[in-house]
Image (tube, rainbow, N blue to C red):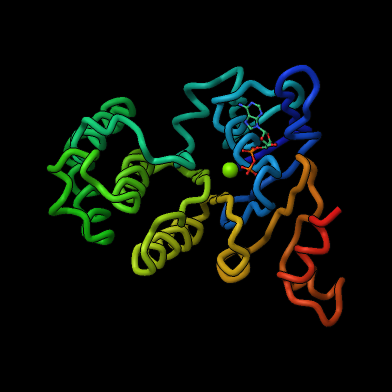
Length: 239
Ligand SMILES: Nc1ncnc2c1ncn2[C@@H]1O[C@H](COP(=O)(O)OP(=O)(O)O)[C@@H](O)[C@H]1O
Ligand SMILES: [Mg+2]
């Protein structure tokens, strides 16, 4: 459902930030996209979401080519960027409604959805305040609510747990599980291995823009007897 086909991205003259990356996230799967800082996770996600045009390869969401059929593709995914500092002059509710308008979410459905998610994230009382007064975590929660407002099948989240308190992180993980259980797909990047280990059906490990491993944590640990995920990860990305 979320498909990277031989994706590459070149910055400047010849710096390959993503190098021939391929994967396919199937309906029902939660996949963690792991790799050290600078590995190319955000760059890959920006190609999957149509923010950056790939130098090579193709990104597909729910069967739609992100470059050739951008509107259809965008209807099919939610994207949470790695930085929630957007349109801070708006209040939380103004921002969410702005996004809901773009996606033409009907008023009734929208209200029910905002109320449900805002309650789960305990942010309902603050939605009327300008986002510039929000903490990082409050901005992050608002971005998540806005991104999910049109209920797309694919979720693509760039470091979504960053800045969330433990309760909010738990709620978001719960939401990911519920979403995947309805035969939808979730891809999220993280540099926190514990989250990937606990939550994901599969992990993709990249470094220097290349895929080093795709599969379950269990299989990976079987391939490296006596080592835990952290030790294996450090060994893999040290070269
Ligand atoms: N706009 C840009 N211009 C030039 N280099 C960039 C740009 N964005 C990212 N990079 C470089 O590309 C590499 C991958 O970055 P990024 O995709 O942000 O990694 P990650 O999200 O895994 O931390 C890094 O070396 C980074 O410095
Ligand atoms: Mg990043």
